[in-house]
Length: 174
Image 1 (tube, helix red, strand yellow):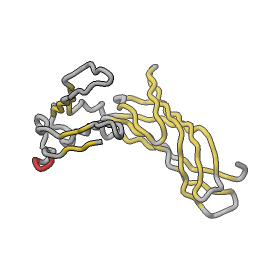
Image 2 (image 1 turned 90 degrees about the vertical axis):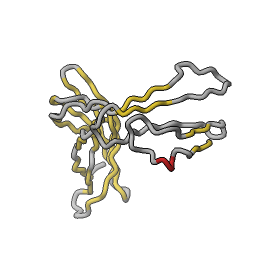
Image 3 (image 1 turned 180 degrees about the horizontal axis):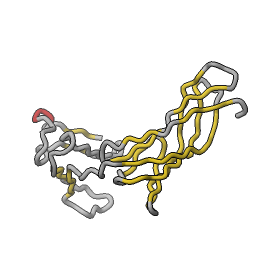
């Protein structure tokens, strides 16, 4: 788009087991003092010593560990209100100094095989392996609507301080 511009920053958050890259931007039109809030989408790639890590913008990937990475983002920028619609590539060097965090929880399931058109009970066990982190384990299950899926909270996970005892009787049906 002729006369449009964008100021883009590549931001990295590696404060946990994931590395999240975002590309916030402000944009406008040449000759105007108005700056727009811009939506950025796209993909990013981080490369180091033959290893490649990829993700979407904004979005996470597995924390790769310490080192210096060549970061490239292919970005699509759109203003709100409409008027700026740009695409381009942004490059930066990213140095991570913190080691990849060790997992703080282990999740196991009591079955490895399921058969179609049958009913099965799966028991997932969440075990806290470390006092590191905030003490919460995030674990999600998805049930297809009207399938009869039933999710019931059982005893608290070994070593966890959550869920509260009042939640243990909870169950949801989908």
